[in-house]
Image 1 (cartoon, one colour):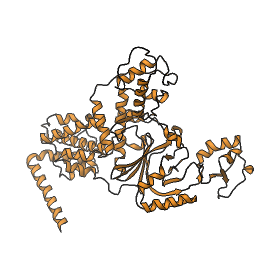
Image 2: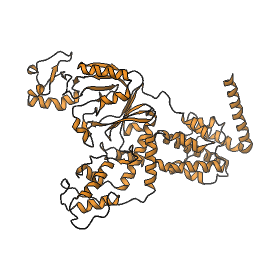
Image 3: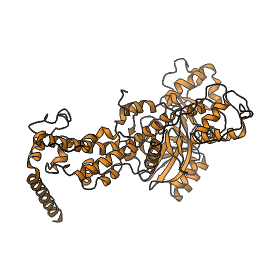
Image 4: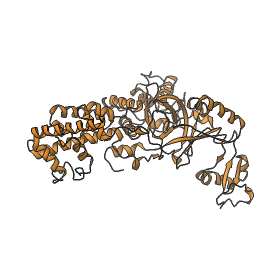
Length: 529
């Protein structure tokens, strides 16, 4: 009863709005209708026939508003102009949304006035869409796989609903469209602050031998000047200017920490790449990572396991709050960790390791062909396609066919004590590793695509109920390979960001591990990619 009453009231309200609109500007309303129907090219070249299709978004937007002209009031146009100008802080170009139409007075001609209204609405809808989901289509640029059952159970409001509701509160409409994630908001503030500052220029440090503390090198004055340009060190005394002394080493370590590098004071290729990245490139780096967050904002649920591939980190979030963070080893550039969203299904305790086909073909077979004893040293068993044991001496290792290499559970198993599994077509998972020393490196790109997690067993104490953790501890101690199902919904996201703000509020600007930033920036700038 109440629903029907509400519908009747809503319909009556629309009719009242329509009647008022016709009384005020009957000609413009009729022109808007005709622009969609009998005159699809009436607003060319500003709007194409495709944008004015009766089945399109713009038509549906006006249908729900009874084709009332929506931007006749100067105050509403001024409010929209203000919100569009703020998109510069999101790394979007406000000019793309036709600010010229908003700043200019509406034409006197009825048809031109109708087209101006349509064009403003088109920019409004486009801006909300870009802000909520990204200006570019993600798939052609940086493919992201989503498991069929991984969509968020609480999807955001539709674009049209936001747009309709926002007509009387435009700041609220843009705030609702903009990702509310802390990571996006912090990165946006950092970008807004930096884009308002004059772009600095700093000296380049030429390539050369690895710089170690205490060394003397002709490049040291340039290194000091480069770090001083960003405030990492003050003025150095002119005596012994070519010596890599303790204050300069400390400044390098601070720089390395803020750029996702191992803070060891050694200036090698990775540190030189970071030092020689210009201020302009760093600003654009923030911009491309804002786009990446817009792409994925709808995938990051309140409870999520989030792997930041470029950072080599895993975070566990509950109610969007970071409860646990650990270092991760990810795929090296030749075997990149894929981007995806899935749901954790189970744990494998004391796992065996079946060598994946790529590793078998590219890594293991060359070693075995050189020395058959490699199998015994690596504790690898040879099986046929049905899982039956084979004698390695009987296998033609030049043409081994459909064999399987498997390593039993144990301290030398590459998967360690535990695997976290989730559906995906790439055969990747999170796992423990005996290669613990590599977690001290940065960047941490050492794997063949899977993600190795430091302290993965300790993660379970935060992730699972106490009773489950006690049972898992008992099963791990048994040494037997066991599958342990995960109850409830636990989303996992693997994604790639080269810039972010850490828990201490510091902006971290990393080297582009997989060389993706340049292509995305070119696309944002409208260049072919």
